[in-house]
Length: 122
Image (cartoon, rainbow, N blue to C red; front, top):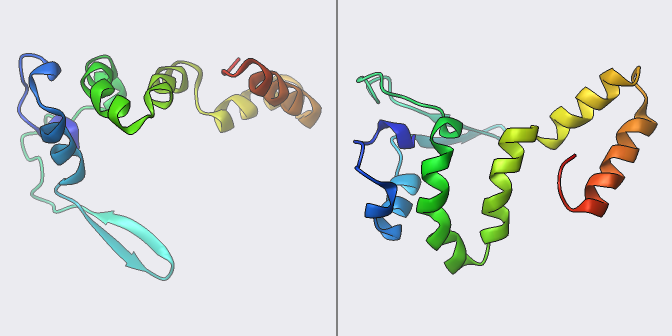
């Protein structure tokens, strides 16, 4: 989504409003039906082949989004994105712990308790 736009010298050169516009006005349409939603992306979108994963550009995106997050009061949540990428999502950590402990759900629950107590992923 964001990778299809022309590169700028620095993400900080773009205004918060411009970045918000790029995020919210993608070339996809949200299609609804049968209680499901899925993006409908035109086949002609991003024919240049310069797509990148958001995780690849995270180091550039986080500083660019910092002012927007601050104005919305969610700076701490934005900072947690780096932990999610580095440690994996909660379900991934839970599956990893269960596999390492022979499928033990007690180990998974103990890990979740530690994460909640520490306020960050283990």
